[in-house]
Image (cartoon, rainbow, N blue to C red; front, side, top):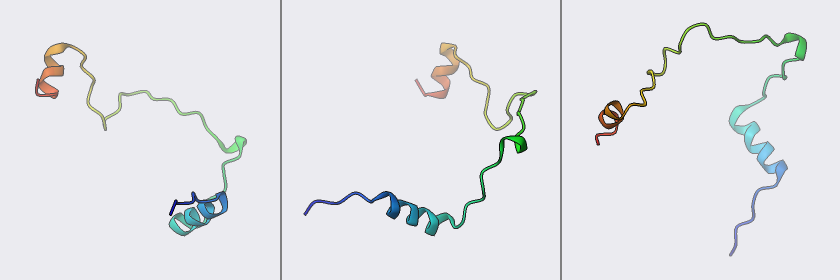
Length: 59
């Protein structure tokens, strides 16, 4: 027996069951431009040199 893929309506129903009613999309006049002034604190700095690459990847 082959599996039938879900229809768009079935996917929409499953999204609604999982997430509930989604908020309305923001209108263009409600949007603001984001600018980053400092480096991100949730990610470490990227080091591309081979020494650090080997240390990170146990090479």
